[in-house]
Image (cartoon, rainbow, N blue to C red; front, side, top):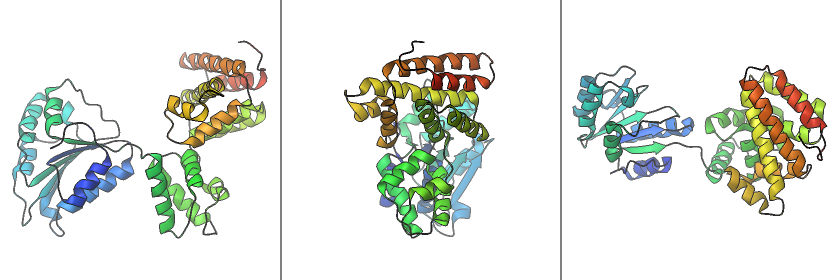
Length: 343
């Protein structure tokens, strides 16, 4: 039986392969592609073909405790097992009567039933509740977090291969950096790249031509332009970010974060370098770490430290109600002062 500690999607994969299912799962996490995939795989593995109408029960939104109890306790029809799925309903926010009834239900889920609750990406129950204590004793909580680099590269290569295309590990890392590491965001980008590419092997030009960069990748270009003192280019990139509908405070948070990373890289030159930078910032891939380290070689420590201070000052102005023009002023200051200036 589950320990209550969050496990990874690989636990569900193993359960399906072994045909050995828990009686109670909670699925959550930001990687919705994997969550939806394994939700369907789990249901299909338990509910026999042709019996879905009888042995798969989905309850959502306003759930009645009596209906849920009936769904869990009723026997499957001409099958050994059934699935009860709860979606769009937070048991932790239900009324006290429901919580008490639900605690009783999960303490004795029949062997023939698997109860599955699907939560949004953010799953932050109040662990002080008695209900959480009860759930943690009997539930397999599965966190569909972002895949690690190795798994993601394997998945990307497999999707390209299914379309008759080949992509290198290095370009997989670039694609992750450029478009983000969530599978559901990568799928349409891969489809665009496949449709555009005229050769079997995918190139960086293919990616750059049709893929849509995420805000963080665009901010990397922005900080590169700032470091190179290319004010006009930096403003052009800022306008591109604004056209993506990015919130000025969120954009400044990304700019400030990268400036702090560049400052850290300046301090780490010759003292741990890329590996220490990755550890310090929780980076899963060397690709962004290499870009940050290369950017740091174009500035000195004073410049990097001053840039962090200026970003903090601009953040304060924005949060006090200043307009997005603060971002333009920040870029002008960052692009103009010399490394030996002291803010």
